[in-house]
Amino acid sequence: MEFCRSSSGHWLTIRSRGLYSARKKWYSYGNLAIANKVVFPKWRAGYSLFHNFAKSWEAELGARIIDFDSLKSVSGVASLAHFFGDFWTNIKGYASFLSGNQYTALTLTARQYLNEKTDFFYATMGYGNSRMI
Image: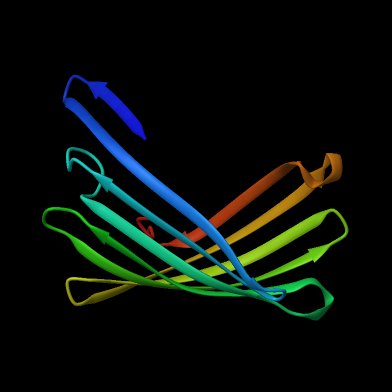
């Protein structure tokens, strides 16, 4: 839960996230958030299904939904990730649909894990339109 106050008013956001492992090579991630519409969307939701392949590869397919007062958007997401040594890389693509138009974005993330993979340094680059959630 987040509560913020500024000169333009105050707002409240309640978020929930979950991770579920159904089988050894499959897991899913979901999130849901609601807010009082001042700054954040009225509600947003996301779900992704992940599959782990041999040789430290992982794929993701998912969807994101966002709802402001005058703006509703649905996005599809797909990614491919790879672990090697203490490093993890991920390339993720988004296709967002808003008011009959399609917008795309691409992000590349790299992490170097430290301390038995409990801490890490990371860098992210992106290109395209913001995915909004």
